[in-house]
Length: 266
Image (cartoon, rainbow, N blue to C red; front, side, top):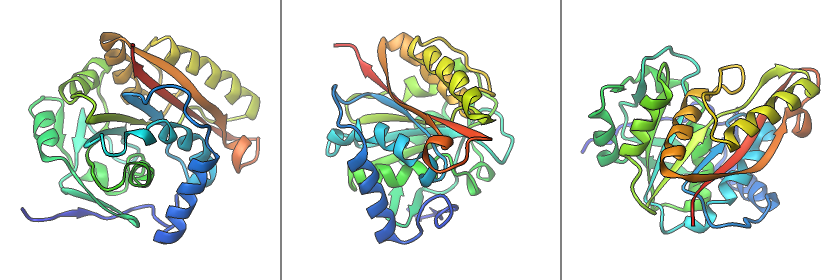
């Protein structure tokens, strides 16, 4: 197999470009996150902004799956396509993703399974600049170690049912973790964002989709998870809900961030 690597696009911008600084920052964020108080989830939603802004909230989601190191072999990673308009869901052309912490292989079986569905195609342009998937990978590398592969899917114009069909095709068992990458509201005032994001969180906790684009840039992948979660009877839990005005930004125009865990019913 010829190794084709998708290079890191936002290292040194969204997160440190130095391996040592990056690992240290992620480990510190995880140390500061609340310890999990429930079994590890099947799926999480985590934000994808620069680590200075959304890292503390993302860490809450990834801390919840830290106990799965050695168990998870495949991470189904979905996030919105910010830069290239696409139909359906896009796989990359490359078979590895690089971050300063090393390369993570794309799971060939998972990619092959997903592309059998008509809404999934290889669309390289969707991945060239896309940060929504990339920024989650260093967290996964730190919490899961080296024993996992990814199925990276950028989500464009796709319905909740279409996304859910992909998730269900790749659902697997304990060896498979689902990670949905999304921020919440964008560029509202601090108080407006708190109100909108609280309402959005209530919808997610009620598995009440579909969300709209103004609620979350990753509304479409979230909507797919909500459909699948209803069918699979997952139980959602809110881990953290803040915005950039709480972390590293001013409060005039903020971006909202939420961390959620979806656990299988006992």
